[in-house]
Structure formats: C-alpha cells, structure tokens
Length: 122
Image 1 (cartoon, rainbow, N blue to C red):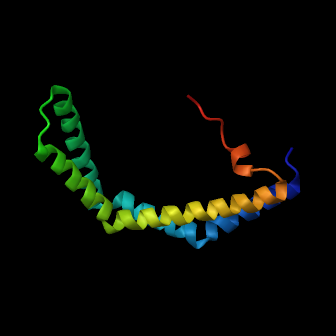
Image 2: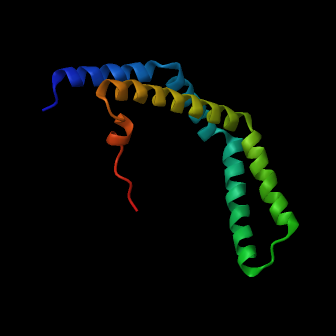
C-alpha cells in the first residue's frame, strides 16, 4: 500500500501542475490547434500530397511542383498562429516538467523521470 504521505504529496503535485499557467496554456493551445479548421484542412492536404509524392518518388516521376506543393503546405502549417502558439506552449510545459523533475530528483538523489519512465520498447 502507498504511504499516505507519498499519496498526499503526489496529489499536491498534480494540483500544482493542473493549476499552473503552463499546463492551462498548453491545454488551451492544444484545443485550438486540434479544432482549428484551417489546421485540419492543411493536415489533410499535406497527407494527400505526401502520399502522392511517395508514389511518384517510387515511380521516379516527382516534379519540382510536387516538391514545392509539399513545402508550401508545410510552411503555411508551421507559420499558422495556432501551430506557433501550440509549439510555444509545448516548450513551456516541457521546461516546467524538466524543472519539476530536477526538484524531485534532487530530493531523491537520482533522476526521477529516467527511473519512472516506462521501458522503451523495440
């Protein structure tokens, strides 16, 4: 059974993370990113173009227009405000989690995230 102090500490940590600006901003940005019609359309267009590109690459019929089309969609996707906001929010959240891991690891005397992470599978 989990020690009650550990459980209380974990609950407090979860409350802290849930109420942090970085988590709130990430959740908002992700929601806007996932539900933005322009982003959804660009993803679909990119997938279609990428599949066509791969088929043409296999058959040796790729044209400069094919390459340009993919690059244009990718450039527009990356420059879209929802994509940029999501990327910034993701980086801020990663930094917060790295700081949290540093604090926990310092108290424990070992790298908590490396130890707690699931084993990599092949």
